[in-house]
Amino acid sequence: MYATRTQACRINGVLYYTWVERNGVRTTTGEANLLLINYSYGSTSESRIAHQLDVTAFSGWGDALKGSYSGTARVGASCTKESGSFPAKPIQPLSQWYTGEAFYDSTATAAGAKGDCYTGWNLTFTNPGYTSSTYVVPLFAEFRCDNNTAGRTDPGCVVDWYASAVYYSQATNPSLAAHVSRAQASGLPGATFEAPLTRTTDPAVNQANRDLACGDAPSVTGKSCDEYPVASSKQGLSAGGTRRTFDGCGFPAIPAGQGPTGVSVCMITATENSSQGGLHSALYRSERVLQDDPFRVIVIP
Image 1 (tube, one colour):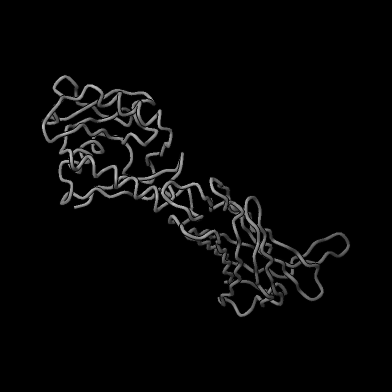
Image 2 (cartoon, helix red, strand yellow):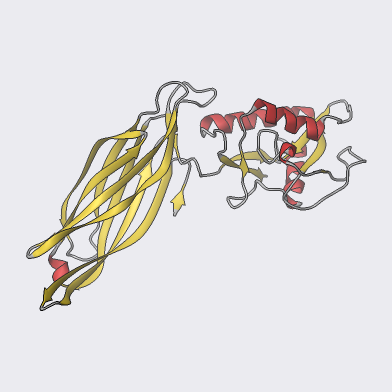
């Protein structure tokens, strides 16, 4: 499985075989092994997505190699099929790729709407002298489309389970990057696909996360309290856990700590702390990161 925020790819195999039955005994007369690549793609600024199906037979024998296959696009949930084509192709020659492609339109285009789009194919095999058979490529719910992203007025579609990244630059925001690097090194999540952060859009949760983490922060000229995981994540202190910190962070009464729960707090340059909010707003807007969507925080040079 491969994915980005606007693309997804799945690979699976299919065995097509032919057989005859005489006097109650079934005899296989041929086999063909096929590889299927399902490639879906969309756009953060369009309500149309596509599902491309690439097929090849890479080995086989007997009567199965005399067959052919064709595709019919399918759709479900909050989208409709605009068009789709996969005309009949022969199984032979082996290792010859054939492609079908279908386009789908989301119905989640009204202001405030969101919905999943399920797409798939039926691959039908025909062969002279044999009964036709159909392999049902499962419907994939790779895309969620919405017109509910703050700061945008256009609909768009994304792979919502893909954790896009916001980047903290050591060169641009050194104190922010240093704090987050140490926080992640202490075991707090957010840097990897395996342990991303999860967005919350609930203002009450956001405020609770800030208050629990930084409500008693000292007053230091030119600095403000930074908490990690960020307040706009469900991994903030409203979910439980305790605070931790590091030497030089300005919280002498809070101990250091390790592990995946809780938050780290540190007094950092106030302008860098302010820019952090802008970085996250830009990510959430451009990548359509909504409630419960995963995201990553990556520190770069």
